[in-house]
Length: 315
View (cartoon, rainbow, N blue to C red):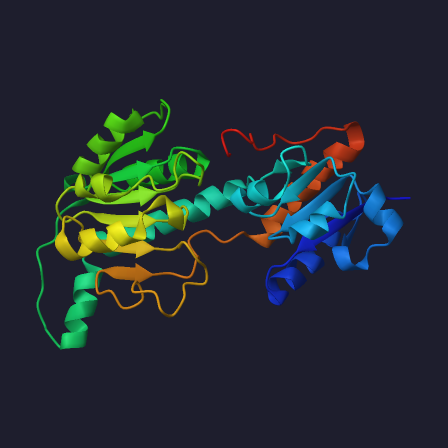
């Protein structure tokens, strides 16, 4: 008899349905995937691995003998906050396609800023016909904050498209062809030299509030920020202040302290803010399902648990 793998999710109905169709096909011959609500008491007790997407923590707790959970998202900060420290290991989704998708988004929105699209959009609303001088990519610097797989892919893509690139991480890292900095001094250096600042690090105790009043004040005059990481990494009040009073010129925000972004948020109507509904790097269900199937297949074959999140580091 094949093992039963619970699928635990409180994502949107459409998203849950898409996964419910894709996962059983990908795991055919390996395990039976069943929604949490369809499990018997015995199946809940026997489950050793679960697939989760924004799960209700009470449902995960109702699977008492889990060894590990496979997240369908790269971000796992909510899981870490809700599951006990002695609970199941948390495996984040590591999909090479996600790095490709994210680097594409970084390129797209960097070019949006580089080519002055916010200015031209404002001119259209005012019915102003006026062109502006265009600088070459070689004359602009992109600072990528966070040099994990997503950040490294984005940095290399920016370099390949002609931009000067600086990379920053909390601890020292090296990427061929990219000037990398680290630590507090390195952060201030990158902020002070970058025309476009891209956030791609995980949310941890160390990165929460990383960019506050002091850090944003250190940014280059007219610099723009692209946040594709997590909302709480930037102090929103400080961001609005620096957009209003300098030195910042624009912010492209795909992540927020609260999502969906409440209608009352001042970010919606700010003329120097572009709001995106968390779409920079959506999970590609077809490729992610194959990765999940490979991970679970190896576990049931020889007991191998994929590399899990380090609870102390937060990623």
